[in-house]
Length: 321
Ligand code: MG
Image (cartoon, rainbow, N blue to C red; front, side, top):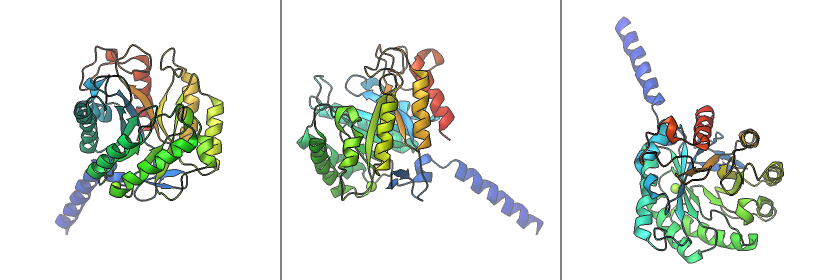
């Protein structure tokens, strides 16, 4: 009897230890949208918090599994975002060098799958390239759509396109993805750098499940008026996902606005909105979180992190469980 008791207690301890070690995606599984809320496999609200990589064509050295592992273990992120550079005049961008580009973003995608965190595949463009995007997202959905880790962001930031144009484009890309992947989350952009969410709220996409709308902010430029626009969109039933944000002005440079960034985090947390910060790069600008001294594969010291790097890391470590 005593032996049985000991055996049962040991089994319980082993089982609870095993569940502690469960990965983040293993625990939460296939994401869904219920109303305006992102929820996990069991329908419980979930908030993802993590970092976006910078444009892959300019900062390819950080596109590897080592940085994903470091971001998960040391920065405690639960999501990363790969920014596929499209439509820029750069020898390593997707149209100029597709093989190199796919190798880079797939290193991060595979890293995220291995580390069991979520990953956003972001078409990092400011203009519409419909045919190329249909081709790209069809391939991604076919190859990765069975992994619950994957989130698609089909148009980083429209600039000059109207909501009607962005909506028509989005319908086509979503249909292409849904041929191969019936369920993973898809993020849709809106005019003016993903700030016109009120236009999407007045005329949303219909007929698809698990669609969310990206809202981007740079806290020193975009303040209470944009949060109020977000409130309007939520009240009209539009699910929001902050897939890019930072604490300085919209140029990505200049001083950090700590108070306004905190106001944004309070707003996002209050509404259980996921948030991803910009960006993993070592460019000489305040939004790039690293100094050029940083190793390419993680293991960064305090001295490698810029002020924004320290701020982001601290926030993830506070807010992520
Ligand atoms: Mg799927």
